Structure formats: C-alpha cells, structure tokens
Amino acid sequence: MYITNRQNDPPSGVVKLVGSRQVLCRDEGEIDAYWANLSHVPDSEQCGWCKDRFGISWQIIPENMADLTRRPEQIGVMMGQKKIVIEELENA
Image 1: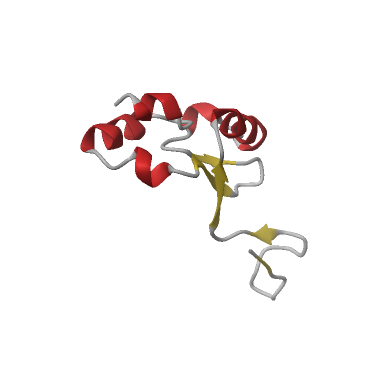
Image 2 (image 1 turned 135 degrees about the horizontal axis):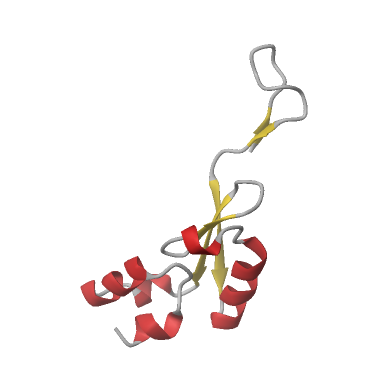
C-alpha cells in the first residue's frame, strides 16, 4: 500500500492501494466470519477472493488449501465457488 500526493497524482488524501492480502483460516466458521466482514459485493467474488469496501482484495482460504485442491475434481469445484466451502472440496 502506498499513499501519494505528488503534483500529477490524485488530490491529497486519496489513497492508492496495490496488492492483496491473504487470510488463512482454521475452519469454515472462520472463513464465514472473515467473508461476512470483508466481502463488499459477495455475488461478484470468485475462488475465495473478495474485495472490501475500500477496494482491497483479500483471499480468504483454509490453511490446508493445497491439500484441498490436489485433484482436478477439487480444482473444478473450487473454480465454481465464490466463498470457499471446505466440505465441498473434501467431497470432490
């Protein structure tokens, strides 16, 4: 994240945000809580990524995401998800 106020930049006080944040969650309850608080437009999100009301991108995923997406079937399920649902990945 950086803040600028050089002559050719937006007016002072405008914040430019670059990058994204990742939140590794222990369980579905934690995913749900972060998603409820961070996702500004839940219907437009995809694959565990959401954007907050300030335009910052967040990836809200389980700690064991690598294990949950080892097989092509699991990847296919994940690609159709907005918020990650652990049980759906486990059962894929």
